[in-house]
Image (cartoon, rainbow, N blue to C red):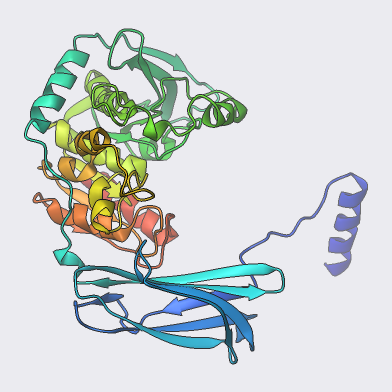
Amino acid sequence: MKRLFIILCLLAGISGLSVKAQIRGNNIVVTVTPDHKDWNYKTGETAKFKVSVLRSGMLLDNVKVDYEAGPEMYPSVKKQGITLKDGTMTWNGTMKQPGFYRLKVTAHVGDKTYDGLCTAAFSPEKIQPTTVNPKDFDEFWQNTLAEARKTPLEAKRRLLPERCTEKVNVYEVSFQNIRQGSRTYGILCVPTKPGKYPALLRVPGAGVRPYQGDIWTAEQGAITLEIGIHGVPVTMPQQVYDDMFNGCLNGYWDYNMNDRDNCYYKRVFVGAVRSIDYIASLPEWNGTSFGVTGSSQGGMLSLVCAALDKRVTFYGAVHAAMCDHTASLKGVACGWPHYFYYNPKNVDQKKVETSRYYDGVNFARRITCPGWFSFGYNDDVVPPTTAYATYNIVTAPKELHPYQQTGHYWYQEQWDEWETWLLKQMELR
């Protein structure tokens, strides 16, 4: 067998192929761990952090580190060039007010740096948002949707035979959004077997990209629609989206944020709700079970849909962005895209007022259907302070499934738990 393997490798080289090893992780790792297994503390308690700098799983002697510690996004201590003789250090941190305390350590080895961090929660169930709830919030969104719905959907669909399976037909679809000629595009997956099915709308994270569609969930027995938000087809080459992201859509999340009627996200939010209109128009929908889910920007859009359309019967919001925008004006961690964090003393008040109509917290206040929440304590894009503030404001049935060590990404177990919950809501598990 050994000889056969060598021969195959040689043949591969001769034929121009290559046997390439996978690259996984780093040999040098910085770990930061708290002394409470759930990473949770009560205000006034002391969190004890242990730092280890490891090479090949063993402590690295005489390693230089920088570290910062304090409330997330607002470290009160910063140190540089500290030598850890045995590769370890300890740190104590506490908070008097509910929130999250973060210790971040950067090790310098050779010409490279390696980061590790840990974020402890202090009475997180007591965190409350800062954003103001506008008195005309409901009126604004009701009128916006009513005006948009004067424009007929005029839906179009195109079969994508190369993506279809024995169980599912896959289409690129589009339908009108907020006004004539403004369209939302997505990938629709419909079971081939005749019948009535539950539906799941998947809303996207930030960025500009093509979409493949949720074929797997459709094969379990559901209608799925995965949408883009930018009003362009979702089946073009990747380079087209890269060009848009670096060109006309660069920084789109900040477009017209000082004008609630012309803010970029007005069209985005309306498009998400009109996606519900489109799915509801399909004869295959069972008329009773409708879910919406997404992560980051998509987590926010899940809150929007659940709040604005009572046909939504469940939602899953994973590390939802765009929540509690104004927290940074009070020196507290704010949600992506951190509108007022970098220059809190010189803010545009119109932008502050507009942000309240596009804040996930104010949508979360209005949700009445069951929801599933998950996020990481180490997330430095969507701070857990804002994630907890949003979760705490929801009065409808809800579940919380934190994965403390994650940042702005998923663990496999987290993904599997999320998918299982969605299937159970649709009675497919």
